[in-house]
Length: 110
Length: 117
Image 1 (cartoon, rainbow over the protein chains, first blue to last red):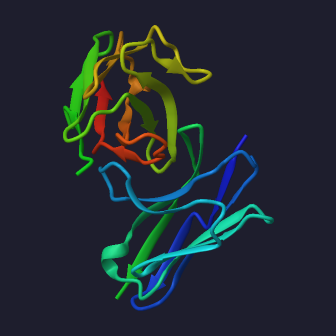
Image 2 (tube, rainbow over the protein chains, first blue to last red; image 1 turned 45 degrees about the horizontal axis):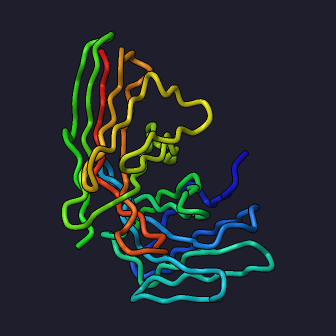
């Protein structure tokens, strides 16, 4: 059972454009929603995270939008750069355990 | 801060042998560490939760006798893949829970690529 659904699985964006990745969850017990960035051959790195009592969080070019009633959250990457090309995982956490989405491979083309 | 290291970064072993992977929290103490495996182009799947001084908790479907976990100190957890077979070839990643109470931050290691021939 896929508890965290992520889409799209791949995304190509022009440099300077906005990258949008969407996730949905089922378990209402989840109380922490991090996003991770992973480069090939490396472990994931925490990018930004949000708790369900907040509808939006922004850090630099990265913004999480959170809709608790719809059980959906999304990552927006503004002014996307080639260096942002990586795989992005949304995740949901409860009781210290993290459940990952399937991942989105983002390619930012010049 | 919050750096997690893994050793080795890659290892090749023969079928039937055992291999140990170390996970260290370098600048914080971690009472809880997690072990994941990741197949190519797939997501991370939690294998087990490692708590310092106690037995690890394994996820459903993970053989605890095959994947031995030891968390002997607040900065070190080890995963031993026993009697490895080619299907155990994967990318193994550990994470450590940040040192403060009530934190949900997991800090990930760089991963270990295991190839079983």
